[in-house]
Length: 94
Image (cartoon, rainbow, N blue to C red; front, top):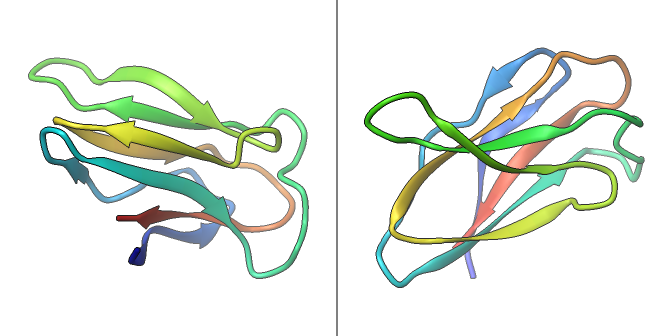
């Protein structure tokens, strides 16, 4: 398995780079931080599937669900809201 960063750790609103998953493939996306800390209560990173129109929100990452599997085919992005506290980013494992 190979890990890469698709959204650098931070606390400002931002979106990950596109996560392209081939047909029949599954990848893992999850949250990371430089220190062992909890995701602030009420903070959720939205997972969107890119469509020809507006993106569809299909899930989220938060303190109780720090990683999730995504199945292809599809193109996805993870959106971080602005918040205060420990900086978190998003990793991709293929």
